Length: 200
Image (cartoon, rainbow, N blue to C red; front, side, top):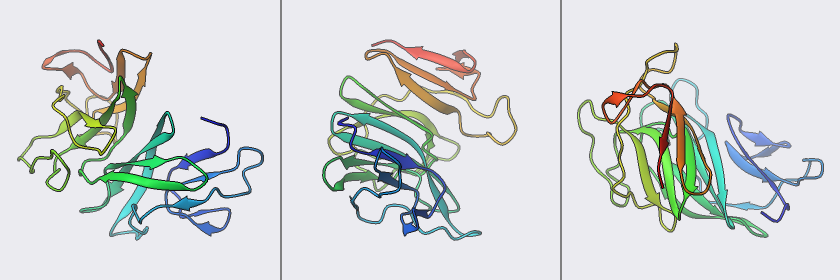
């Protein structure tokens, strides 16, 4: 928010030659100086054939950034985490729900998440795996990542190769409404393809 750094997330292991797995920050002038990043390990190391996690989404609210992750491989980090932005960026909390976090948005003090969460046993307010059940839209506390009770239903894998079982892919807000885009044809079991709007 103070234009002191540019946040990065994606499929990488280094930034400017420094080991920095999947998320980090650099200076906004030329990108050649890494911003101090004082986080506990969040992403597992890239290990093709076993576990690969990467950053998928970043949203900023006030002096906090929220990062989403997608993990390929059993038990890889798929959740999200919050970072306090300052002279050294530091981890506030981490939510370890499995299920490929694809999109995040902050609306009215809540963090909204698009994923296909299916195992949140170890997350505050979480739930165990239920056969065939994926929670593709969730809300969380911005304070500690605790799961809330907002769980609209979408289907998934309707239209494009390689997207099966995911559903939501993008989120945006005008400050009060939540806009969700993705690979779905129904929302709350009613026809609604590709984009949905949730009122304030």
